[in-house]
Image (cartoon, rainbow over all chains, first blue to last red; front, side, top):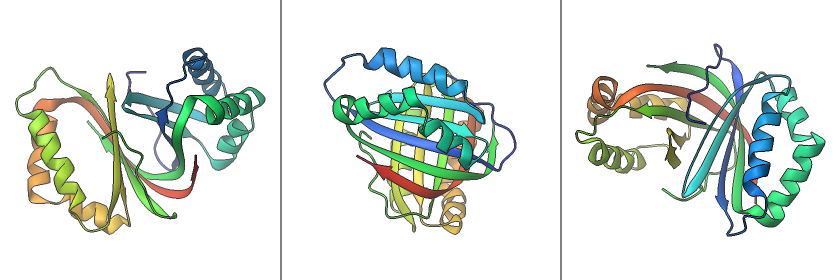
Length: 105
Length: 105
């Protein structure tokens, strides 16, 4: 993803997912792609931005908190989360934040 | 920055700065380092995470909105912002968001 998400006027929500990968590949890239595609099909999805350079940062944008809960509880996503905790990530942090204001160039 | 910011218990604020660089280097790296150092010295600064891979994502964390305004109005930072708009960035978006919840591994 090399684009800036074209999100609507605030307020909306951001999920900031910061992670350090483990040495274990084991299907990670395939799953990451799959989850990216699946996320974009969920209700309330507004956009996503992602970069990895040492640390990985993926910010996904959502209409409201209910949409975020719904995506977190998606069956395939739950499996990915579990494998992530067990295999793919050395550490991660998820932050749920309400975007109050934005501006840009 | 290859670390996950060790932020306190929410609520606190995040500034999500997503950018596409221009082809122009012209002092960018030096200024980026300087701004990173300077930000960390500001009141209310809680941490920062940054990665560039096509798109650049820098998320800085702050105690409150006043701290963010104060940093935005910093004289050296204002100069950097101006050069950023003129030279270094093809496009960017700044989102100011209140972190309501976090969890991790």
